Image 1 (cartoon, rainbow, N blue to C red):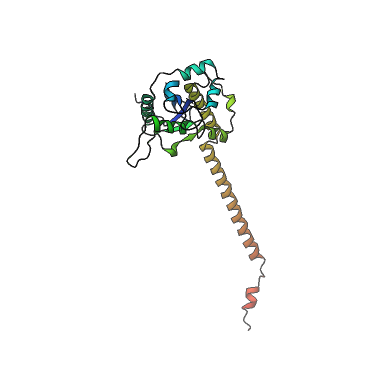
Image 2: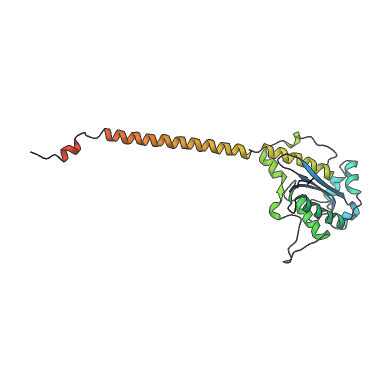
Length: 239
């Protein structure tokens, strides 16, 4: 049986900083259907503290933040064993295969997950084309922002229950899929918008017909109010 491809990929990372160039501890990617909320293939790898430090500079504020998180979350994020080089290669393959060559990456913020991963790819697994431009698993115009979708939808994300341990990259990514689907479902549907357009077109047509009838009535009244014999008097021939 053929596996259906999903171009939408929710990505979440755990890091030792908040900006491009920071160390990346773990990466999760979840293929999903935005309209249905269905989840497809998932990717989750942990590289750990020492491996992460080899490819980035940590931020003190983020290290302090990790110190306030649960022991379970810290253990999951800091004790991975995978090689960043291997993870980068496997992540590229996963993102390519999930969408059949196209990846629409979603991040919970327009400048965090995706931007940081691009910088991470530059250091861990750099790839360039014939022009010298960097090659990432996505095109810059396909990058999608979950925060913007939520803001436009107006949903309350706190009302959506979280399953698993927070700040676990995979649990976070799966939760963000639920948030994305809820937000998308709260937007005016295309079918509803199409129906409304037809309603407005019908209203406009009705008003146009009424306007035409009114014009016809005014013309008729103007003709009826003209002097009956004006034309005859002007053109009368005396005997």
